[in-house]
Length: 271
Image 1 (cartoon, rainbow, N blue to C red):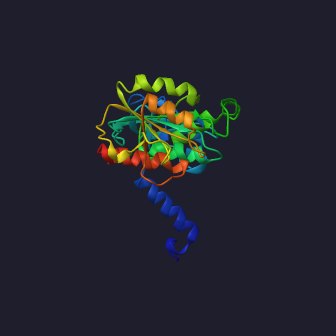
Image 2: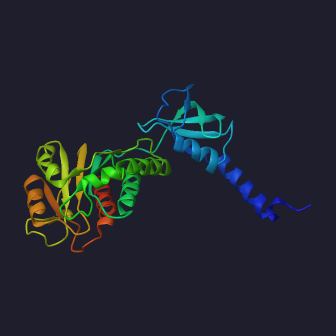
Image 3: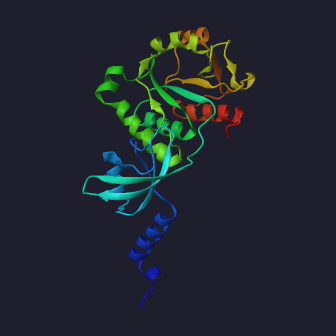
């Protein structure tokens, strides 16, 4: 009699079952509040449980509601398109950052903005503010027609699931930089506000390392588009907040957020 290890199909199935028995899958369940509740998973989550992971009644899972609560749960019922779980005991999720960071990111072309949203959520931001700048290649109307905000919300949920957080960062309504700039100066009264620019845009711009940045309860970091800020936008930033660079190198717009967040969270001892 051949061992199941010698049969690739059985080996894969057994390995998958063994892995699932050790590591409970996580699902977004916004209606989960207390132990003992029976809650239905959103359609996307139910489809993932049923069709992708092929979990059935009795399977042990974890659910989080996006507001900071996470629970052990048990799959109670599945149909072709729906899944319900019985909420169990509360458990600890990944710790949220002490500084609630809003990433104001100029919308990037193609799928690059998707990547920024995914990575920023894993890094620990509290909210993402999409921004339309002079050199952004799409308009607010285009974003609305393409339902980009809804897409980024789905990406934020998926990234939250992957990284172990129980709080889903908010994806704010896209705004123009002209509308955002006047709100920055009042914000500096209670929060750290930094606008990141490429080297050499102005003699008034300092490298990030030159600042003595103490952690504050809130922070907003502003990242520009592929083509960079216009002189007028840099001037508006200088009048409203601190404009900084990440040294003498020019970085791609789609990696700026991760580098800036890494530098700031390290400075604030989040890592």
